[in-house]
Length: 137
Image 1 (tube, rainbow, N blue to C red):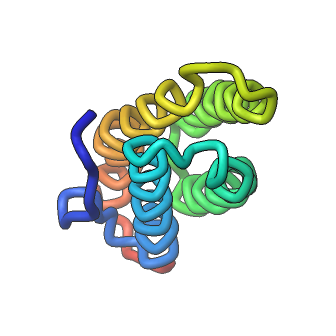
Image 2: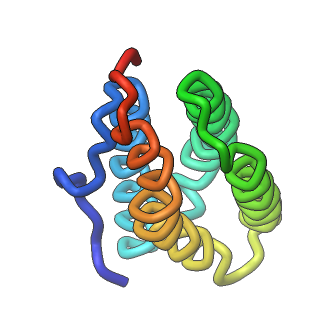
C-alpha cells in the first residue's frame, strides 16, 4: 500500500477542517508504519481510540459547516458519514479482538476515504461555498 502524506490538494480552505484532515493523514501514516513494522498489536489501541473519536468529532464539525453554508446535499453527506462511522467502528472492534488482516483493511479504508471522500465528496461542498459564499470558518 502506498504511503500517504499531506499535500495541498487535500486543502479545503477551511482552517479547522484542514487541521483535522491533516491530523487524520498523520494518524493514517502511523497506522501504516505500525503495519509495516509488525507493531500493529502494540499500536492498535491508541490509533483506534483516536480514529473512533476522530470520525465523530470531525463529522460533527464538517456537518455543522455544511449547514452553515446551506449545502443542499447535507443529508446525503451525513449518510456517507454514518456509513463510514459504522465501518470504522466495526473494524476497530475486529482489531480489538485481534482478528488477522483487519489492520490492513482499516488502513485501506482510511486511505480510500481520504483519497475519495475528501477529494470528491468534501470538495463538492467546498465548490458550493465557492459559488458566491464568503468564507467564515
